[in-house]
Image (tube, rainbow, N blue to C red; front, side, top):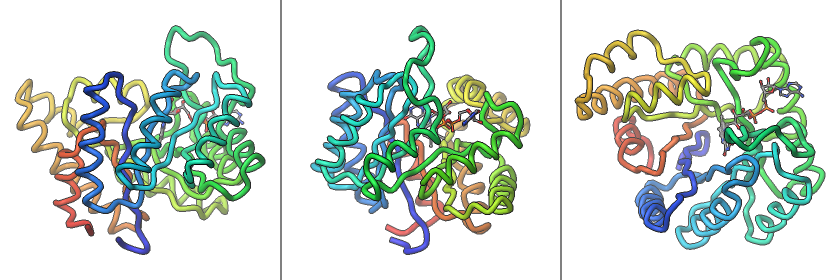
Length: 281
Ligand code: FAD
C-alpha cells in the first residue's frame, strides 16, 4: 500500500442478520484489496449502538482490517460515549471518526451533553489522549445547516484544532469544490490531510434524494444525463463509473491524499472505480 496515500471503505451496520452476513462477505472481498482501514457508521442518538459495535469488532477482528467506528455526539450522554470509547480501547481500535451526527426524524431535539463535533474531538482527546487517530468530517460544498461558507470554514478549523488528525469529506461531484476547500483551509493554517469521500453512482433517484438532504450538488450535466437513462440501471451504472473514475483521477493528480469510498455495503461499484484507477492492491 502506498505510503503517501490512504484508501478506505465505509459500511453501515445492517438491520437484519442476512444483511449483516452480506456486509461481512463484502468486507472480506474488499479486504483483498488491502485498504488502510474500514469504517462503520453510527446512528446518532445511539440508534445503532449495538450494531455498530458488533460490526466494528467483527471487521477489526475476524475480517482482520483495522476498523474505525464512527461516533456521534448528539443524543448521547458523556457516559454513553465514554463507555463506547472504553470498549473500543479494550478491543485495540485506534481510529475514530468523530461527528456531531443528525438525529433521525422523530427522535426530537438533540439531548446530548456535547453539541458540536469539535466538542466531541476535545472529549475524546481528554478521555483517551493519543489512543485514537481522530478523523473529522469536511464539507467542500458547505454543511447544509451552516450560515455561510466562511462560517463553516471557521467551524472546520475549530474542529481540526480541537485535536483531529485528518478529515474525510462529504461526497461531491465537482473536483473544484474540493480543491477550493483545501486551499482555503490551508490559508487558515490547518495542514491535516483532507481525504475525498467518494460516492459511486448506482441509483439515480436514491442519490438525488440523499444529495438534497446532505447538501451535495449533482451538477446539471450529470443530472441531465442520468435522467435521460430513465430506469436503464446498467447505463446509469456505466456512466456513473466513468464520471466518478475521471473525477477521482483528477483528485489524485491534484494531490488528494487518498480516497474514502462510501460503499453502501456493496463491493462492486467501489471496486470498479478502484480498478479503473489502477490503485495498488
Ligand atoms: P459539526 O462539525 O459539529 O458541524 C455541524 C454544523 O454546525 C455545521 O453547519 C457547522 O458549520 C456548525 N458548527 C460546528 N461547530 C459549531 C459551533 N461550535 N458553533 C456553531 N456552529 C457550529 N452522520 C451520522 O449520524 N452517523 C455517521 O456515522 C456519519 N458519518 C459521516 C461520515 C462522514 C465522512 C461525513 C462527511 C458525514 C457523516 N455523517 C454521519 C453526517 C454528519 O453527522 C452530518 O453531516 C451532521 O449534520 C454534521 O456532523 P459534523 O460532525 O460535520 O458536525
